[in-house]
Length: 331
Image: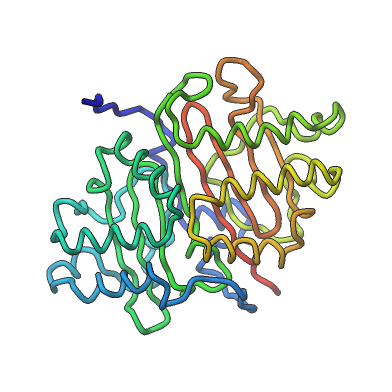
């Protein structure tokens, strides 16, 4: 039987709310999903998508007592909070929902992930928290109103299904994933997301000396500082637009790999938003010397960021990834 390990990680305990986003960006950028939006992305999940259809069925199956525990107004502050380890509601899936409702939640979860991503996330949840049943669910708004979102959280997990209720925001808002396996060891043995660090480091390996000077920075920012900042912001690392076509192709491969655990509709919306904000050339790639496990110069902490795209991957001492992809507010 697998040991029930609990890894201590101070960064798992610090919350991040809309107010923090505003403060971090000097009041100029809001958390995706709360800002006024002008244009509508062309590719996005719909209210009739499989995950959203299952979320509607879950909502309709709830008793009045259950709704008091897990249902909220669409603009409730809980929907805007992100954290690497938190319970969005107190009840756990296993203890609160009927077997049929649990199966529906699993259907929603399958619906927002790819087949490979679903298996990876289940592996992570089993090791980090004791399984899918130990996670937590909230529903915001109501089906049929155009403002309805399912959200599931827990250790190293925030995932959503919104049917594009939050326009021009990929994944329905910021998401988080991670895994505690291999904590503090070079190569993170057994970690289901370590392959993403290996893929990102292929980009660094392809850089020449001067490019590495731009890309490699001493200290990583706080992992949960992922506001979408728009085209006027200054981003860390090297501009992807400065790279050769072959090097840019490697960055594109990284993006394909890190998006792969999620359903195609969310991937398509993320890529549409990226294109609308200047495409691959407007992104920056940064690698950080801090947290270099084993001193092997395989950089465990890295970040891709542009006007409407933030993907912060902290692979030391274990994996936390904060993701925020949205079209910034226009004035």
